Image 1 (cartoon, rainbow, N blue to C red):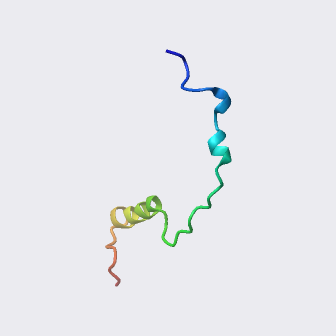
Image 2 (cartoon, rainbow, N blue to C red):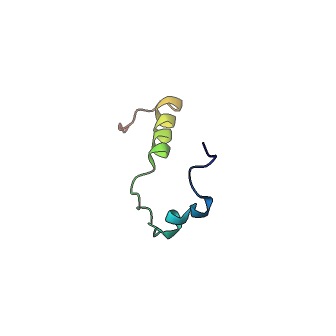
Image 3 (tube, one colour):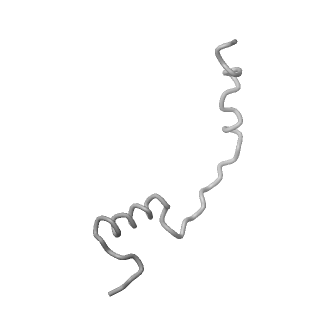
Length: 53
């Protein structure tokens, strides 16, 4: 069994040759940030989400 799965001279050739695709524009916050914000509101502050006073 050899020590590598392919020639090291070919490493990274496909990724370099593919065109760069821009990320999509988000209208809502990233889910991880949104969940953290909801956790802080619900658990830490004890507020009820969606109910206004």
